[in-house]
Image (cartoon, rainbow, N blue to C red; front, side, top):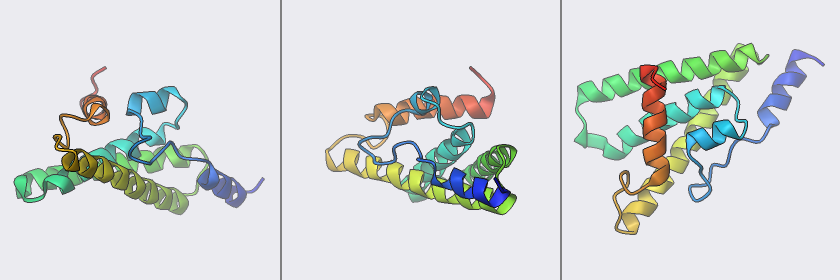
Amino acid sequence: MTIRALTLLALLMPLPALAQDEMQPLRVEVGDGAPMSYIGTRCAAFYASSAAYLGDQISEDMQDQVNNIVALLMMTAADAMEQEGMEPDAARDAVVSEVEALSDAYRQRFDANAEAGRNAFSDDPVYLADNGDCTAVMTGED
């Protein structure tokens, strides 16, 4: 099988559930067999969507830090995809697509919580679990 065929096959593999009402905590998705690259894309989307939702409530310096974290996580995810046989351009495209889809799913969760009169973050068990998991990824803690 050619690299191109492998790349297309990898891109056609189903991603973990993205609908906001079906989204599971990152630890569940990883436990269910999500590829290692998913940790990077999921946490990149977590940080990017959280900062976007907060908008002007966070400082410019904080937004710069978030941008750096998101870029690092996306590069890590692309590297993991490349190590699994994907070509660099295809890996970068796949990462961008996955982060966009995951960010949309987070945004849907935030909006649904707010519309229901709940806190967009602290009343969401998926958000709370992912906050702990993504913080652990960035700090190297278990």
